[in-house]
Image (tube, rainbow, N blue to C red; front, top):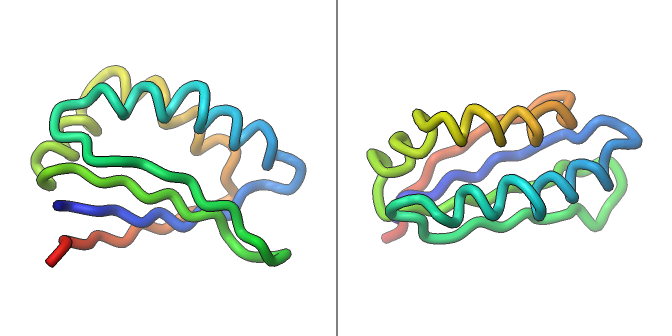
Length: 94
């Protein structure tokens, strides 16, 4: 399983809109993709910490296939626009 962790610093005052975009737009779109293994958005419990988005696909090529779709190009900006910055880490399950 190929897994991404995306640490996301959400703009002040955008938390509710960010979470709504994840649940109503991003999650439904990604969950229909070939090789999709799961997605979750983790809200920080402590002030000043970043959100963490976890995405799993059967393989990196299938994840990259999703990234190349027109649908991804439509839904990702609706998440990204609420972020001041983000960083991505890539993992494989063992």
